[in-house]
Image 1: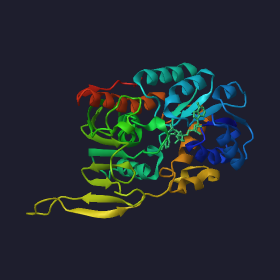
Image 2: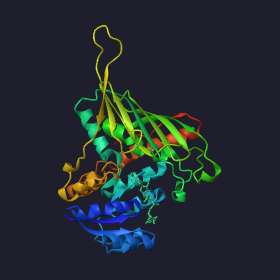
Image 3: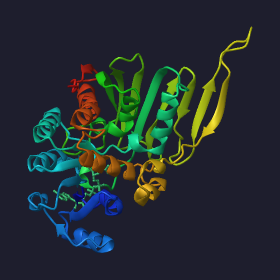
Image 4: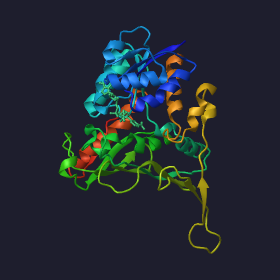
Length: 362
Ligand SMILES: NC(=O)c1ccc[n+]([C@@H]2O[C@H](COP(=O)([O-])OP(=O)(O)OC[C@H]3O[C@@H](n4cnc5c(N)ncnc54)[C@H](O)[C@@H]3O)[C@@H](O)[C@H]2O)c1
């Protein structure tokens, strides 16, 4: 089977084009962008001749089996529903949607269509997550005691739609790793907003907070996940990652993005000694391109591609279509990874209460 793919939104989306072009199971490629100048420029650069400025124009094209949406967040829900309703498989950049109602609507459209839906969460396909997952599966980490996720990125100068964006509504990069690692979901969240957006940074969301900090309770686990999300007024370099602490081994993300991680191995004190000895070593996660077809394996080595995740995401989306199975981040999983942030923001807006998160398991 050869899958025809439309890549929609050619900012971040351009990075995925060459991967689809080389994937052995992908045939026809169409590109879509509302900006004709960008469409022409990206199309010429990657020699893609089939182009459109409107998603609807390609949804009835029999050569398009699947769409990958990389449009601004506000379009994700309605474009996902349009694609699924038109019988197309649908991959979508994070987040799945911005409200619980829209999460439910995309999920319902995915269930009704019987087509593949996948939320393209980069963090759980990055080399760092892959290495930590191996430590967890082998038992080296031990029982997980605590997780700390963070995404701090100052967005002054970004497209206007990011102004005042509720930080927790974009929680997936910072939270998904622990949900994937423990194969669990969030039951409740306690969240506070921190700081106050300056007038020029207030957007249309009614959100007053540059930063939000939440504590997430996990179903079937005694560990708690603490997540910090900030999009404005937080003076540090961009960081998007996590630390996880087991009762044997802990892994910490570097303070400056791109550096090596740190591994802590803890043992019991010797007879008569106080405190646990901890050995600290550099932890360099290896690329996992060997899991990919050789045509796209090289993309996993890219340093600036969210931990080399892009080809793994494409491969999982395409293979789930070819194999006729749900994707790893299907609509239920995507809703379960996105909703905790939407609820967390609501908790912050209510002055820091604890709120339950809907259960999307079936
Ligand atoms: N690590 C990650 O997973 C990650 C990283 C970056 C961006 N993203 C997500 O990817 C998406 C795109 O991000 P970006 O930085 O490229 O955004 P952007 O706003 O810079 O670019 C979006 C592109 O989509 C086009 N577009 C806008 N509306 C459209 C429409 N209705 N139909 C077709 N095309 C349309 C624009 O012309 C533009 O070329 C966002 O949802 C963002 O949250 C995810």
